Amino acid sequence: MLEAAIVLELVPGKYVEAGIIAVLLLFNAGLGFFQEGRAQATLAALKSRLALTASVPLTTTPVPFSKTCARHERHPRDAE
Image 1 (cartoon, rainbow, N blue to C red):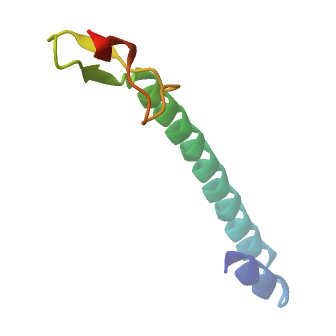
Image 2: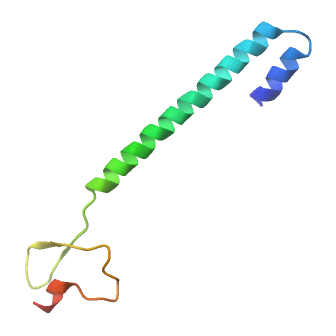
Image 3: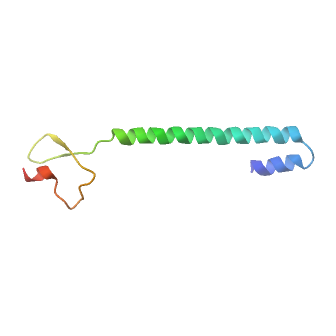
């Protein structure tokens, strides 16, 4: 919509107003790009801190659960 406003301001020769709208549009796009990058970095940090653990019924010690272990497979400590 702001792109259309820029064009509509340029038609009658209002270059200052069109320039202001263009600067605000570029500022908004840059700010959105920066915030998206920070959000992605925060999400990656949260995912790296996430540790999946499972309690084995025969012991009270939490056991790291491998992401490669399929749902139908038994965990190596299940046999204890």
